[in-house]
Image 1 (cartoon, rainbow, N blue to C red):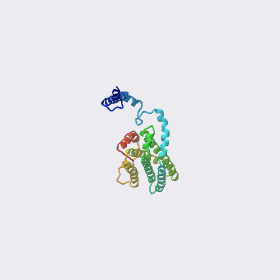
Image 2 (image 1 turned 120 degrees about the horizontal axis):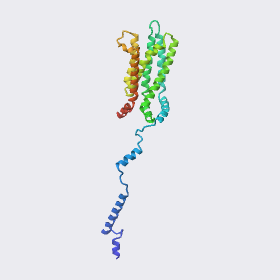
Image 3 (image 1 turned 90 degrees about the horizontal axis):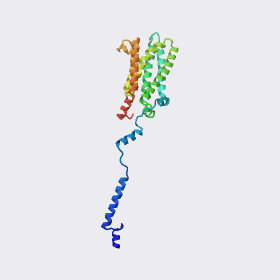
Image 4 (image 1 turned 30 degrees about the vertical axis):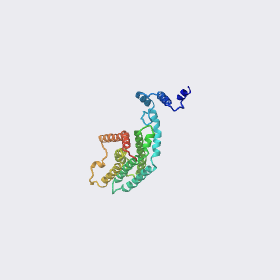
Length: 281
């Protein structure tokens, strides 16, 4: 009787004990498997994902929140734009005032007016290149709930405003020093080509063509100046042309709006293209 109990005891090393242990382990294993929750269906998983989307998933932002974010965005853009950009604008405007007053006279006629307007064009182009070469714009696009389009539009607006302020001040100074330079001809020779050139340069900079933008921004005012210095210079007549008719102004305005719209609307595509290409700049 004692041997029978010993043979079935857990401490025994007999064959009956080994079989007993195996049955116990199998029972525990089945119990553990049965205790695990069943794998949820695919539809349940997708429903849970949609209820709690990822942080990187684009979600529509309410309109009023976008409006409230515009103020902080402008302030952030102002803090991001280096101070040297404004110094460059003032320096070029001061040189344009000095050179235009030296060239304006009986010998050169209205050449000072042309040089002044061409240097304002150069100032606008360089401003666009410097503004859109800021490396913190991508972080700003990610941190603000407005997207690349609004960030680019804000950068364009700030660039235009700064040039209007600096150029307007320079125009007041140059006309006060030399009454021979009239403000209306300067505005007529500047506003249309300057805006067109600025929008082209901005579009190129958004698509990471800064070298082409710089070349164009320097060559366009230079060619206009050469055309005025030597009327016989072998350059096309449209280089120094200014819209004079209603149809010409309408076409210029449409082209300007089209370039501006292209720069803003293609900003997300340009940004994603840079990210896909592994651009680290």
